[in-house]
Amino acid sequence: MSHSQSHAHSHENTVPRAALIAAVSLVVLSLILTAAVSLGFLEREAVPQLEREKAQVQAIASRDIRFDDRKDGAVLISDAHDGSSIAVIATETEGGGFIRGVMRGLARERRMHGIGSQPHFVLTSWEDGSLSLTDTATGRMIELGAFGADNRATFAKLLPVGEAS
Image (tube, rainbow, N blue to C red):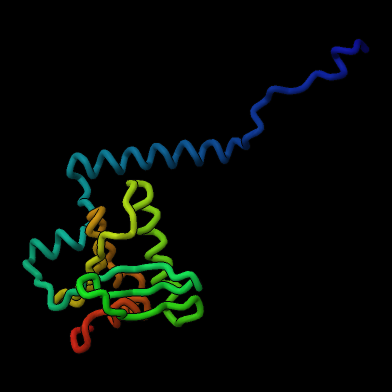
C-alpha cells in the first residue's frame, strides 16, 4: 500500500439527506408564502398600529419617559419632561426583568443606528385596551399586551396615576 493511499479521505456529503430535503422544503415553502402574500392570495398580518389608525382608536393616556442605567445596576425610569422619578427597577424587582428585556432590545436597536439614550419613549394606553411603547428615535412601536397581562401591567403602572387602564 502506497503512502498516498493510506491518507485518502472521502469528499462525500456528510449532511444527512433528510436534513437537506427539510431545509430545501422550508426555503421553498417560505418563498411560496411570500409570493402568495405579495400577490394578494394571503392577507398580511394585521399591524396593531395601522389597525388602530384605521378604526380611529384614540389614546386615553400617554407619558413620555426616559430609562437610565444606574451604577448599582438598577434602571431609573423618569418623566422625560420634568425629570421626576417614576420608578426604580432593581434587578430583583418583580416585573423588572421584563422591563429590562424590552429596554435592552430597544437600546441595541438604537446602538445599531448610532443613537444614544437621550431621546425619550412614549408609553400609550389606547381606548381599545392596548398598551404600546414607542421609541421616538427609531419610530419602533412595541405592543406590550402581546407579552401577557402581567407583563403589560408592569408597564401600565408607569402611566400617570388613575390612567393605567
